[in-house]
Image 1 (tube, rainbow, N blue to C red):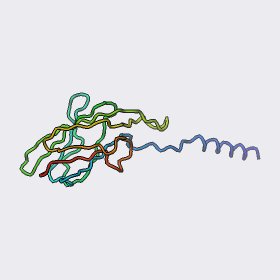
Image 2 (spheres, rainbow, N blue to C red; image 1 turned 30 degrees about the vertical axis):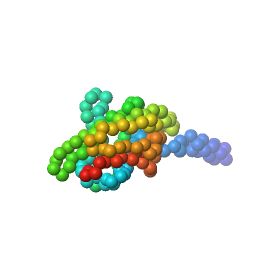
Image 3 (cartoon, rainbow, N blue to C red; image 1 turned 90 degrees about the vertical axis):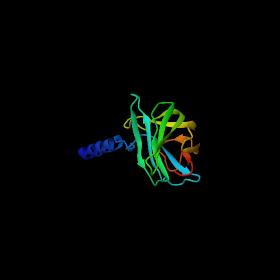
Image 4 (cartoon, rainbow, N blue to C red; image 1 turned 60 degrees about the vertical axis):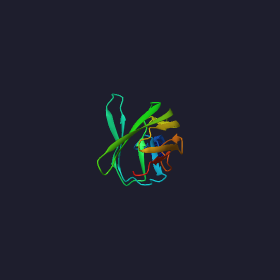
Length: 159
């Protein structure tokens, strides 16, 4: 009888020692952009790049066409993200806009079992005006939730 009680007690302790927290597979915060205005779907090809810490370009969105929205990751701890929106038309002519997003970063801790993530609060956005007419902040809090757009992006007609 003692062995049964001891065995049940041991199993109970082991069961309560396990963590029930599921770490997110991708612990990076993404922003969602939704096209608004006259251009609701991309007809030209959009590629979005940014510069890494070492100064090299890296592609965040490659040759997207026919989309009405897209998601892009945010840097972990930079206070300003600089993105390069390149649009290539049917005649293979490419023009580029620079988008600067200012933000505050704060660490997000879920469990000792999970890696540290960073969430962000968007404090401003600016852009050059070659292809983009304007960008408006719709939701300033950037977490794992991309169900609603963070930015409304207005492209000039013809894109």
